[in-house]
Image (cartoon, rainbow, N blue to C red; front, side, top):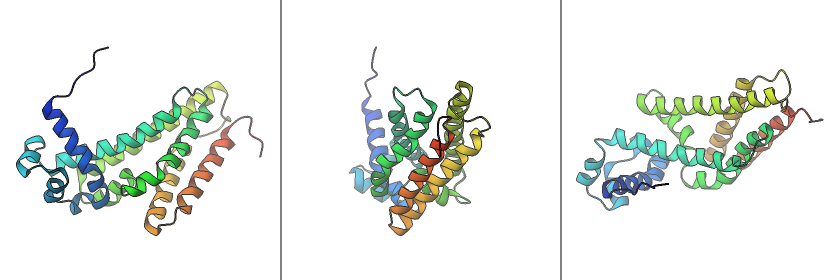
Length: 205
């Protein structure tokens, strides 16, 4: 297997994205200035604009990067796991592992973007809505496969469960971040785990 070695330009772009990621996530698109980026990176405005045509392009790349970190956490929890129930459990497990780091970096990038971009930034909002749709389809796909395998209770609505899980995670995260009380997020994770358990054909209340 031949690994692609990043060019100097690609390394610079990646450095800018990774450095700007927590800034955009904490301060939002409107609250982040080009000076914030130059101060953090040590690069000139010309260097920033030499790699990204404008602030919008950088914000979109940063959003993709921040979300990719969350998605990778989900993937890591599912490596080698074949059971549909255990794959679903990977979501609350990942959130438990990510929770403190997400708070330190400003909270969930999906939630932050949805709150700020609604009615203010069409491209960022579309990116966030696309993320929700992708996560929903992925969770529903796991449930659908579990139904076919006989691992999940007949009559389970895959998309309803997916929507419920996403809503709980994002709602609990919002309240935990706003109040500084982690119990909101922890309670949600416990509840999602109980919902997943109840889908298991072998579960007995």
